[in-house]
Image (tube, rainbow, N blue to C red):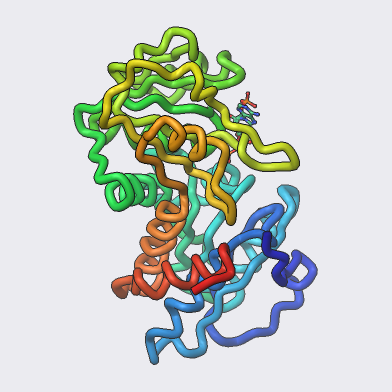
Length: 300
Ligand code: ATR
């Protein structure tokens, strides 16, 4: 989709930029649309004219060293993406409630840039998901029943966030044992394991895809929409994935007339919250949204 410039641990070791920096750290990371979104936001503020946001492709084995170096150089903050969110959470000792709740960190803030001290951890993914559901689908989880597909990092954040917001979560994963272990492991009390064959569709208000089934060479929908029947007219669907093309999950939902939206809004809102944590300014949402669309769809 995008093949953009990124830096490695070697580049970081030799990092000589003196001006304030930010970045996204992942493996792989070249697909990340965060740099155009965050740099467009920074450009809106004269006081951040020297700030820049970069991509860093860092392997698991180098993450600890990388965090130390980021702390020694003039880095204001970072975003973490797959596979580092949980690992980084365990490498820091200061986390705010958003991070403690999902036991992962997607945003780090260096309180004393250049001092070598460890950053504080936050998670803005749950916030991003809730804002995405609100803006795209006018959906408020309170008192609703949500069918959640997938139990990786994204699925765990969704289960915890949706239950905390007052939803009953019916959770399905291709490998059911994962859900069976995660429900008690995460201390979830209003989340239940389901098999696709057992779903009483008339009870479901929202179906969320957190799986990566729509990625790769042969993208598929994790749900066979041909099996969906008797659902509420108000049933809606949200795909945490985003991409240039409509996902199989969204196409499947739309073929039944189900109101569906993709994860671009989640990406935007998690990024906006991270921007506010780093800069203490209100994020310029419209500019960030335009930059994201341009990066992903190649249009303005
Ligand atoms: P992330 O951290 O981004 O959530 P992940 O930890 O790799 O990514 O999790 C991917 C999720 O997508 C898992 O729930 C995975 O199911 P398994 O636990 O059975 O592996 C799910 N997944 C991936 N490909 C899938 C497919 N083709 N059909 C259904 N689920 C799929």
